Image (cartoon, rainbow, N blue to C red):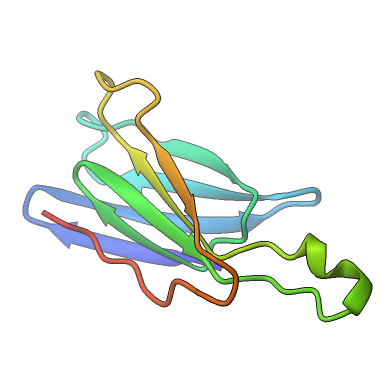
Length: 111
């Protein structure tokens, strides 16, 4: 579960992860609803950390390794995902899967 509250002089908001019956979702809400509308994303990677800035949000998940010998190919690598809030840059979100054995331990917003 992620629960992040960000209070910056230009921006304030929250990120909350919710587990639903068939998947997880991430909700981003902004204190200044006139400047930003709420964002909802499907979470396919099991994000456990997030950071919120005025220009976007970054998320990360740990590596999920299946311990059984026959299912090692089903492991999910640690993932880092950036979701921008600008409307002018279509398709500018990005996703990085870290190599096996490496894992994101923290994410930090930038100003």
